[in-house]
Length: 90
Image: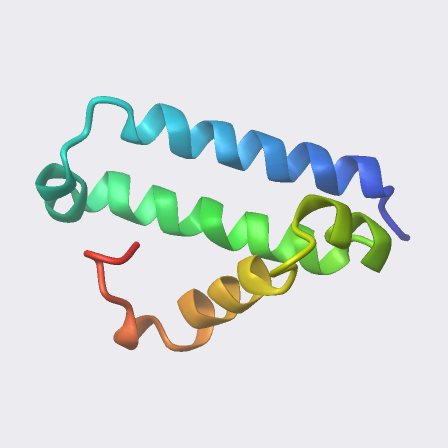
């Protein structure tokens, strides 16, 4: 069963909003040391990357005309190369 592009856009927006709520008022030092917040942000970045992968190319281009594969590449980095993550960059 295929999901609608609108559902993937909803997922993308919901995850971005969650990241905003999780990090509001959070200093960079607190973000890196608070494992629950850091892990929740990583999970939501993965959701964003996966949702972007599922969107048709024209929608991906509308969201980010210059770098439409960046969220998907970040998702792959988190999922497959988690050991190479730099928390200071995230």
